[in-house]
Image 1 (cartoon, rainbow, N blue to C red):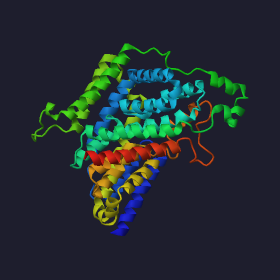
Image 2 (cartoon, one colour):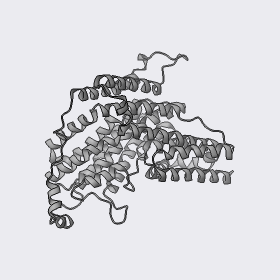
Image 3 (spheres, rainbow, N blue to C red):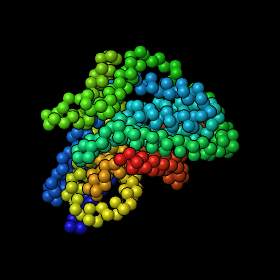
Length: 443
């Protein structure tokens, strides 16, 4: 039994690593190959694919992409810039809070790309070392995912808990992850407030100032305030938030919903799907969005990649864990129950390689459930699913490096001594501890 377990474990781990190396939808495709090998080669019974979770993500991503095409994301970015330029001295605190809530509102961290050049420009104009707000802002934009009611990671947890027979509401999830995320961001921002040398004392920066082209680049104005925002863009934002508000209302007042055929309230996993599609349609009509533009938007493309990745990787992981459930419980279950923080470390390590919190949860949640960890505990450890800042190869981190015109935000000589490491460790560490504490208190 032990030998068979380790052979299958190496197979699953190898499939994940190859999928990560290939990138994009390869994680899903190779996950499907892993299912085939487990079923046909090792005679394991295939588990059910995560259909409900995939449909939730599909509905939310489609609505978010419609909002992007309608100009709603541009409007949110412009509002954020107005706030930052009104209080430039506090950019190191305000910028990460803005990127955090921008992700909470949109359900994706991709909106941060438009804001990073603005954050850098505000810091330069205020003579603040840009590394301070830039690094934590990139980290905060990803921390906001577990606190967003429309993010793939949150909807995956919602669907997984319902499927596992231990349902939690959307309110339950957000009441844990939202305050934990905010406290984690503030802790990391507080550390960042005085990090590094001031620009006038940074010899490397001063040496670069001798280059006229470098100096000219610093003087350039970067802003979104000159971009005209249409009325329909503003309406699309109002409609999108109305959709999120409707979901929260339905989650808080289930008696508003009709009963299903089994005389039980309609599952929230189903409610999220039809509500987000409906409000996506409202945005479509109000903004006269072209359907083909939705399919070509960056939010839609990233979302579809997430759906395919979760399809394959979650199916493979669940099949492997179900087939080896007894071995896992007998050999690892006691240790994890005695020291649940070890599961958070395992989640963190997986996320460092799997550049998606939803995909990370797709791997770890079935394992946690098989080990006998209760859903409230797994919810408390949810912030640990973000660790892809560790190697600083994620697009938002690379964008922050490229958009810092001073060059202070960077990857160091030894690869891991980069600008995002300490803010990331502080932010994720603090938010995980806070979320764990809140979950234990609430449940």
